[in-house]
Picture 1 (cartoon, rainbow, N blue to C red):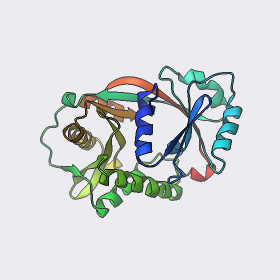
Picture 2 (picture 1 turned 180 degrees about the vertical axis):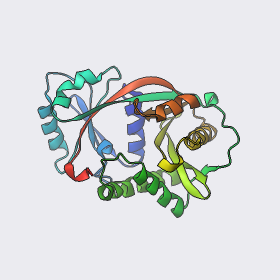
Picture 3 (picture 1 turned 30 degrees about the vertical axis):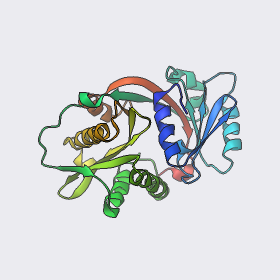
Length: 268
């Protein structure tokens, strides 16, 4: 499946590798991941465009028809030019409205990492993957309740590990005194493109260059392993990590508009 949005194209490519379904509807795509039922952005609608002809309540009802047991609502817009202002009616209806920055970089443009006292390597063992989950819990948004978030991470990490073991990508991490402090996944999404997943660094280890080492190592590995020509990473434009990605060599390519309503049970 190819979208106008590079961000959603690479998102959905990885989801399909993991067993998610993509079904065409009139005016939108339905993406479903029954193996990760609490994954908002594994169970969502991707609209061809955001039109004022269909109000937020109507899209909520359509979402409920497509996902009758879901407790969330998640809607993406396959239009890189769509702005936050275009979704004002959703914000007024109680949706979280956000635009993510989609950045790209050629592997040979990745900035070199100077000598580091830390160990950066591929993650493969049971202990490694347990540590990946703990980094995910520690770096979740502060208003996500821990217990449901752990359940979600258990399902999602199991899928990510399977994809790595099947040769579709790899998870990389940087260690400080034997502890996994920073990690990220990277997956091939077509013959020339690879997409990063879930870059995270434990709060107590931030601003030491660990994420930079992890992202660079993963990107170079993808270039060597898959002959990747374009690396894709998606970031919150208001979060400091985007500055790190720019320093590594990434440049803004487009924006990605998302709309969601989270269930109260998932909030802290």
